[in-house]
Length: 186
Image 1 (cartoon, rainbow, N blue to C red):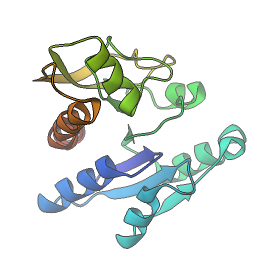
Image 2: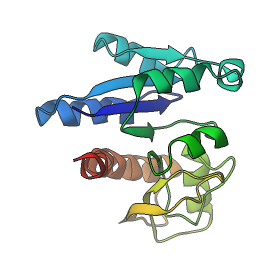
Image 3: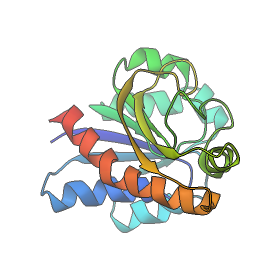
């Protein structure tokens, strides 16, 4: 059994997808979901599954509450699944090569501060890109600059809206993110 800490800020579609993936494969893991938004829908999804949730704010992060919870949990892997804050440098150093993120673009394009979700897809459409995709990477001290673990793309065309690009990219996330996590852990 592996221990996976999942950080999220919003709906939790990737978190839910990861839990479903391992459940369908009959792989039992222990999870801790850490959420920086008390109104995030991921909280309800976790509670329905009886998965422990830590809801935290910046003070709790800065005062070491998150770090203490991670120490107690002893994660094999920390997964940023729609987590919108910069991951703290002290935690990156404390868990080298154990913190991964998924980004909804083909890094190094469309990465960095402020480039998440619809912002990425709007930029991709505005620049008339022929493809978009996902990048799963290790987290370092800079936004979206850690070593790439996995990258894949999907073709897009000029008639696609940012929402349509986002839907195509989300399909890639749901297909590949759990598989990459499994390969890293097992």
